[in-house]
Image (cartoon, rainbow, N blue to C red; front, top):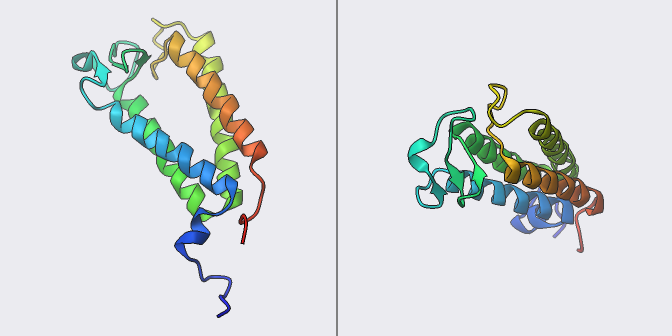
Length: 152
């Protein structure tokens, strides 16, 4: 039976490398956003603040986080899953755009001092390196993911 253009199956939604990669990256961001609110996984949880460098909570004891930081991770996760559901073009745009955002955040972390009032995210040295790796990784994933629906 032939399907029309608007007819989609669950298998169609998972085909194509760009869509799969965007969904995986989005799921990881969702998981990280959730874990940022879990005491124990996030050390110094009692110091967690909404925003700013005064939040001394650290995901896995390494990456400084705040409520705002965790919410951004959750939103990036939802955007990734949404882009994967929309199509290959949206998935690639998410990977490229998200990578660009994280590269800008890396530069921000290099320029803004840890104790500066402008450090509202907050970021520390570990976050800076992670943002660089995430930015480059997402841009590379967007570049290597081919357009299309994948194998029939």
